[in-house]
Amino acid sequence: MKYISLLIFAILCLLCLSCEKSDNKSQQQYFLQDDLGNEFIFERVPEKIISTAPNLTEILFKLELNEKIIGVTSQCDFPAEAKSKEIIGDMLSLNFEKIVNLQPDLLFITVEGNTKEAYNKLIDLGIKVFVSNPRDLAGIDKTISDFGKIFNIEKIADSVINDFQSRKEKIKQELASIKKTSMFVVSLSPLILAGKNTFINEILIECGLKNIAENSIVPYPVFSREEVLNKNPEFILIPNDLVRVNEQILEYYPEWNNLDALKAKRILLLQPDIFMRPGPRYIYAMENLHERIKFFNQTE
Image 1 (spheres, rainbow, N blue to C red):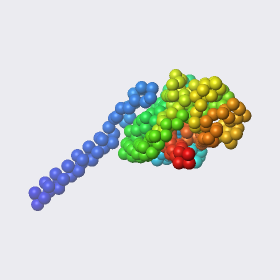
Image 2: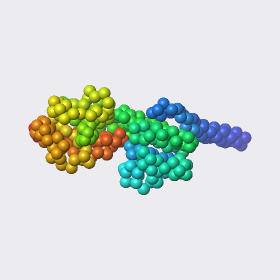
Image 3: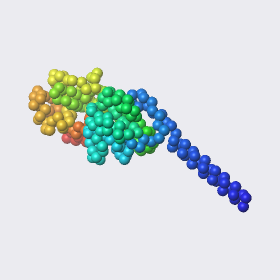
Image 4: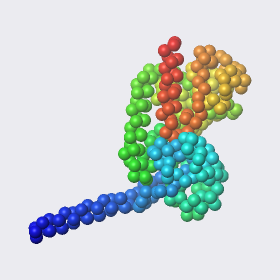
């Protein structure tokens, strides 16, 4: 009987020690840098979060963190459930009083979409602000990875990233030999194209297209009418909120009727959200473009 009691006592001690180690692991501090280089110490998983940018909101939903979101901006319109969240203003004009009243554990903000003044104001109000500013495909993957670490769902984040990688590789292999010139129109007046240092340019490259603005110094260069004529792109990609039908382009630039893209009717009207938001739907943008380019290639 004495030995049985000692054995039971030893088992209970081991169980307590195991629970203690598990509890210590869940409470273990971990460090992370945001995209401004600010260092954060996370002692627990944030339970109440606010997103001030639609691309970040989409990433949070992609990682199934929607129940933790207590506030978004009016531009956060995807998925549909995002529109049911508390609106804390728009990207350029945040409602600081509402944000303070919501008492978030963490607020996500970008550099390009939000303002420096808003960031400084939030810091002054004592809000914990994490800056995520993906500008390319690697940056999008990094944001997904960062969120995975913050919310202790690294396996889910890694699974999303790996899925994107395998789908990109399939597209790249199928369209590697295309190499047709293209331009992605961001604005018609003035004429602004997506340049080298953009995730849009990476999408073009992955889909076998050569960007006529690939040598630009700035991410979104202004092009002249003459430059476009000289470059003579074989594909023109343009968001469908700029023009509804191909012929509308000629209302702005009638001389483009001589471009190879118009002669071959290779004008692609695109859904702006998936092509212009550096978020998780970039993979759908890439697959959509892949299928349409493949169609043109097969019919020529």
